[in-house]
Image 1 (spheres, rainbow, N blue to C red):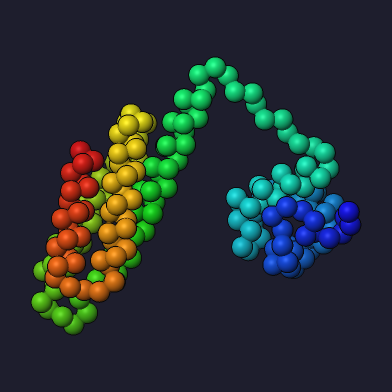
Image 2 (image 1 turned 30 degrees about the vertical axis):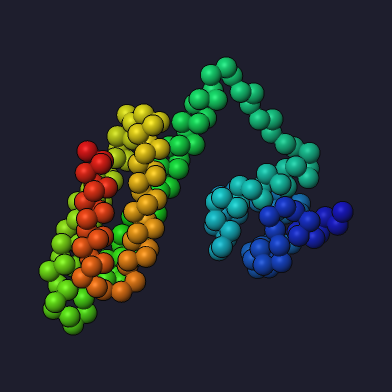
Amino acid sequence: MNMNDLTQVKHIGAARMKLLNDAGITTIKQLHETPLEELSQIENIRPHYARLIKEAVKELYGQTTPKPALKAGTGKDKKNALIHQDLQKEIKILKKRLKQTNENLKPLGKKKYLASYIELKKRSKSLRARLKSLGLHQSNLSRKEQKKIIKKAGSLISSLKIAGKKPKKKNYKRIVREIQSFSNSLK
């Protein structure tokens, strides 16, 4: 193995190798010595890939960290953590999709859609407030409730994606109705 070829490291292709070279990292040894924080500051590498790259380099150097053995009863805890992560991810996507839909459905110069748009903004704002409080009280929810919210959020996200392309009165009404329904289910 050529220790000067960064593409030998998992998660590094030609594009990331160029980014690393531009940052002054040209060998695997330099990559190994670079702190994780510094690596994650490089443009387009981000903390997630920085961590993966550092783990891959440690494997090359034979410094793998042993993964902790699962204790009895941690399988359920692991499932709860995964569901918790999925719920956080869905909430983040839903907030982003709400923002995009509000932008796409702005009634630019069309007064006939203005009242519908105002209602959409009002419902979106109340849903965002509920999502924020849900994030604070998420640990109090059962796994079943979290799964239910994830499923409904996914449905709402797909509806927002479809309807949020063109301002039409029926789109406004349908989205407002679905937002209100989802918001009511969070009570």
